[in-house]
Length: 640
Image (cartoon, rainbow, N blue to C red; front, side, top):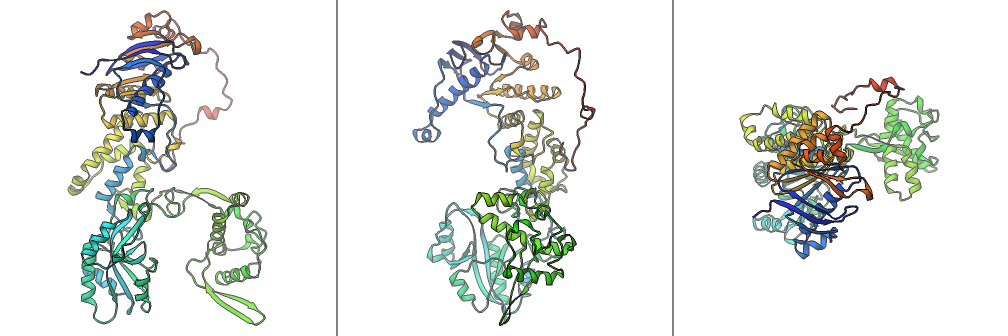
């Protein structure tokens, strides 16, 4: 039978003085007392430490070698101990990518919601994406330049880790001879060796077709097979007609000219096809969905044009851009002269006199525009062509390549953290941000506070089909949002960075997660969960703790809050003083028992014989603006 109590005999951890207690199970127990009296030593360093030690000892020897050994606390005997979970007031070890949405798993469910019930739109024209017929796909391919050699590919793996030996064997048995793996065409009979911990893209080669003569029927057959194997998606990879056979045999690694076509997700107006939405596409931690400019961080550490030119009276050739450092020689000058001819400006003019077009050309380049460079020498003029990426791109390359700390520190003087210009801080690519549910994309939903997100989810208007798809997902999202509201965190934004959370906020998030897990028969130990909580929300927190208790758990709270003490089923007061003068149980039982205890300082304050007097005189307000300051909100809803 399950024991009715937890018995502790002879606890001597830290300043505890042979403490022996009997704690009722499945009750809300409050450990209180002056600071340093030993209540945390009893709760965390005795009860929780012994519970963790026993759990690790119950594991196999193989598992224990990875977890290490925990020292036994200085106590004679503990019986009736349940599996223990500690929810302390400390910052979590989350990385900078973690947000409130990710650590509460709300973001994971939202990704599934947008992938399965979202409405895709074209990132270019913002029109609803509709399905393409097979005839439209064939016509699109036939409209390409005559004589072009093509590979018709069926994508079967996108950004997944593994060796995929079974896949290659299965494709070989089904009659396919070649596949393109990470952009390289290989023979399936040669058993491609893939790294199991590296993400791979695998496409099966359906056919090689040259667009000349009557190839319509053969192309239609290849498209039909590719769409069937690729689940509605195919890839057209153009090859050089002369070297097409060599390219296939050698496996040239080049995917820059690929054309993605889909029978399900395509914009007929812009003539663009898209990957089918998947949960990975809405994750800023996955290469499938992250913004490639900022790697899913939403912010970039890059060169700031405002810092690059400290003296705008200098000309470009006179090193107006300070981090260029060395004098511009003849070779670099003839490249910049080609840029000046194209953008129509004078390199010797002061920087402040250059037009915005000229400054943009020098800093960010001219894109894919082909330039003709002229190198003049005694024998004449040597002309050669190329593109220009810009001075900032050159500085980025030098910053990444250098290993000198001094040089890196020099470049960093001209760099600044800023919002990513490509995604505007959304951290996702354009296709992911073009999928909407209820008129909002996933970034806009995560920009809402927990309270606003709950209202948005409750007010969603979905079609009958979408409701069937999303019913389980919405149930989980609503439950987690409700748990967070119950612990007074409705003001937090879902995209709030986890490392910026206060200790009390992080503790209440973990508490909300535990409420949602539905575990029973567990001993929860909490460290002052009411710290930083508004008095109006304290009752909601207590209701959450009582709900944990009613589910069949033992909840032990280290707390100074009076409302928590009065709501507790059992109170233990440590004292009578801090440090060496503490470590004893001065009162135990109900709140009336604590009030009657003569040694209990807590009891004296509870019954009103002691009180903290309100100061009769207040310090004058030095800056009245601070006293009258009101909370402002940014356009995205964050409080400042």
